[in-house]
Image (cartoon, rainbow, N blue to C red; front, side):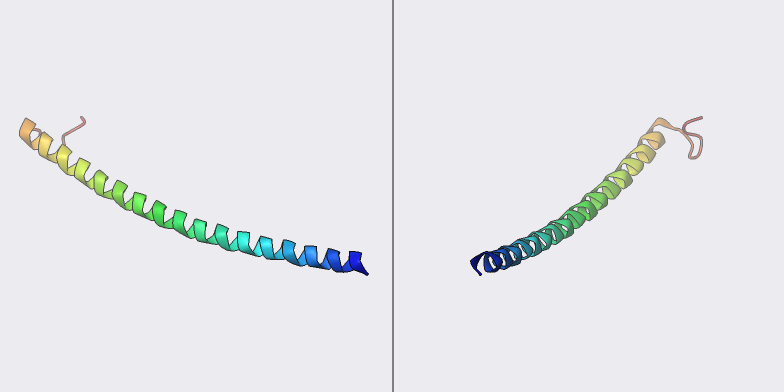
Length: 70
């Protein structure tokens, strides 16, 4: 009778450990998603700043708009 009870207890503990790990994975995935969104926003801001800097530099060089790169 001891071995079946031990097997059931170990099975329950195993399922509980898997549940805890699943929750941790879910939380880390959510955190990673927030970090990706934050990085994407920073990249978009930097891209806008770079575009504005190129427009300003082209204006200082006297390049008409729409002609740059030809």
